[in-house]
Image (cartoon, rainbow over the protein chains, first blue to last red):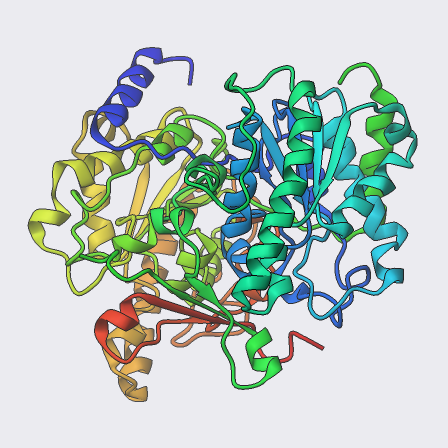
Length: 290
Length: 290
C-alpha cells in the first residue's frame, strides 16, 4: 500500500469533483461498541410477547467516537428505525434534533434507546428491570460516558428516565456529575390525544413548556456547543425551524435521500395481528421517481 | 480512556459469557472505500429509465481490509440486497459461496457488482460504457487490487465479464496478472427457463459444467485458501453442500437471523408497474415468531 502513495491522491480528487458527497455513519468499528454489537441480549432477555425481537436490535444514532456532548435516551425503535437500523430517524427524531439545535448541538450528540427492540404491547416491570437488560444498556452508557466529553443527558419519556436512574445507581453513575433532564417524549402529544386536535394542541403546549424547562437547565451547562447561539425557547405550538432534519451523516452508507428527509414510507400491514407484526411495507414517496 | 484499563477487561468477558456472538461487517471505515462510499454516481450516470436509482447504491459484500483472495463481480442488486445493503445475499449468493467453498475460500473474498443500482428493464450500451460509470467501478477495483492478496477474479455473467475487461484495459489492469474466470451467472438457469423444469435442468447442467472449467482453472492458482481441501467438481445438478449459507459476518450489525438464512422475505408488490417499482414488502418468515 505504501509503495505508490501518488496513486492514492488523485483518487480522492476525482471522486470529490465528480460526484455529490453523501456523508454516512461509519458504524461500529471502534471498541467497546464493536464488542457490544457482536453480543446483544435476545429473546431470553426481551421476550417475544413484549418486544418485536424478530426484527433484530437497533443500537444507536450519532457519534460513537467520543465527540458527543449530549446523550439522548429514547424509548424503542419503530418501523423506520428498523429499516434504517438507527434510533429516532422519523418525526420524533426531527423534534429532538430541533431541541438539540436550540442548545447549539448540531453534530455532537449520540442517541440510544431504553430498549433494543420495538415494544409490542406493554413491557412488564420484571422485564424492564431485568439485570441482563439493564446491564447491557449500562455497558453502552459506560462506553459513551467513559472518558467522554458528554455535558448533558436528556431522557425522553418515563422508561428512558428510569434507564438513566438505573445507570446513575451504578458505581460509574454515582461517580458522574453530568447534568440531566427528563423530558416528555416527543410524540407523547400524538400518542396521548387519539387524533383529537384540541387534546393534541394542549399536550403539545404542555410538552413544549416542559422542554423549555429542560432548555433553561441544560443551556448553561453546554460549555462546548457546535454553534454558539442565544437560547430561544419554544412557543405554545411548533414554530418554523423547531423541527430539524436528521442529518444524512447519521445514516448508514448509500441510503436514499427520501429515507432521511421524510417519514411515512414504512408501514406495518396485515389482515390480522400476526400478519401485521410480520410485515414492514416500504413505499418510495410519490414523485421520487421522475 | 487509558485511565482505567481494568474497567475495560470485565466488559468483554461479561458480554462474551452472557450473549450469543453475532459477527457483523464493520462496513466502510477504511480508505479508499470510505471516500468512494461518500461520493457515488447517481441518476446523471445511472438513468432512472434503466436503474432503480431511487433505492440507493449497494456497494459490496465481504472483506475490504486487504485480506480477500478472490474478487467476485456480480451484476446488480435485487430487493433483498436493497434491504440488507450488501451484494449477493440471496440464492445467487449461496450458490457462489458454494463455488468459493470448493476453492477453499470461506472468508477471504469480496463481492462487488457491475452496477451500483438494480437494473430496471435493460441497460443501454452507452450507459454501460459511460466513463463515469466505468471509472467509479474501476476505482473500487483499484482499491481492492492495490497491494492486495487477490489471487483470482470470478465474473458472473456477461456484464460482469465486460466490467473486468474494462478494468484490465486500464494501466493498473494491464500491470496485473491475476487469474480470472468468466462464468455463467448463478441464477441464469432460472432466468433463462421461464419455469420450464426441463429447460432449467439443462441450463443448470450447462452452468455447472461451465463452473467446473472455472474451478479447474482457478484451483491451482489459489495459493492461500482459508481451508486446504481437494477439488471436488459439480455433478450435473445441485448436490448436497453445493449451496452454502452467506456468513452472518457479511451482514451489517444487528440484522435478524432470517435475513441471512433465508430469502423470499422481500418482494416487490403493486397494482401497476410504478406502484410495484416504488414498493418493497418485507415479511418475517412464518414460524419465526413463536
